[in-house]
Amino acid sequence: MKQIRYGLIGCGQISANHLRAATEIGMDIIALCDINMNAAKERADQFSLPSVPLYADHEEMLRKEAPDLVAIAAASGARTKIALDCIKSKVNIIIEKPIALSIADADSIIEESKNNNTMVCVCHQNRFNPSIQKTRFAIENGQLGKLLHAAANIRWNRNEEYYRQAAWRGTWAHDGGALMNQCIHSIDLIRWLMGGEITEVFAYTDRLAHPHIETEDFGVALIKFSNGSYGIIEGTTNVYPSNYEETLCVFGTEGTVKISGKSVNTIETWVLKGSEENPKSIAEELAESSDRATGHTALYKDAADAIREERAPYIDAEEGKKAIELVLAIHLSAASGQPVKLPLEEGAATDYIGRFC
Image (cartoon, rainbow, N blue to C red; front, side):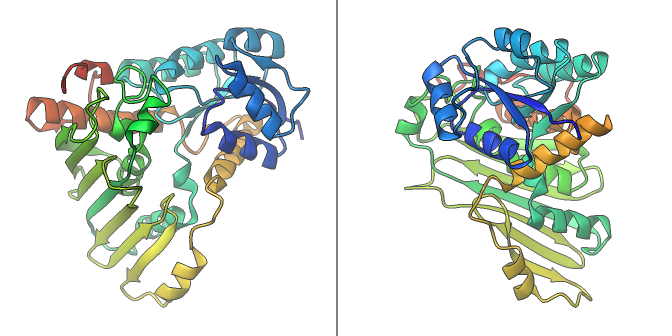
């Protein structure tokens, strides 16, 4: 079996999960890239990669190293150009969430990947969590009965020190806001679990506790799905003094499921009509792992298999676009004070520059 030649672009905080996953499935790590060479060196030292070349320019890395797969973990606003450069070089990519900060950029990634026959896998790795997989299976097999509504609550803390660690954080052009950056995993999950197709969104967003940033730090949204069910999203980075919870509840006529934990990987409630499964045993079986990179490893394995089998990955670029479309619909509704119909033809995080000034 051919070993995949792997490069990483962006060596910030999340990059450790990428390198750990690449190492665990046996990829050949051939290059690290970051505009901050110290960050690249720190990651190389951390993962004992003394002979791996380090680059400050991703285009130079692509020319010299010719990787099979590149993971893009740079700042959100920088990802589109890097992704397009990789795709045009016939390089497959894993791209961190969000895939882009505009509908147009997401569409360009999708179109170019089709034109160049390259794989694009989007890092919504929580879909691989055992708790999420079990819930998805139960929904698909009708074990919850008719879906009624779901609720995603992301009650986190990001203090001033966090935002000042990097100039791009809390900006519309490079971060996209709390919903786009911190909350998008659960936003992706609620859409995916409830069937994906949304007809209408109504929302409020605000900047309540972070005058030093441009973007929102709080948002609530009501979603109407095409299957007649509803979704409720509450996302914030204002909780004192630290992260409080991230929970996802799904309610059907014959079942109730609640998932919690730091990475939405703990079954807290599992009650299905007619099921002989013991809720306590399920909770113990699917308790959250101390290793939060588990989802990345599963995602990397799927991406590697997709390359070898010449198929689409489990989470492709179209799925990544759906997640940002919902976030952008929330912002549009909040800014206009009106319900927003989906699908969106256009929209960008930068449309809201100056909204909270």
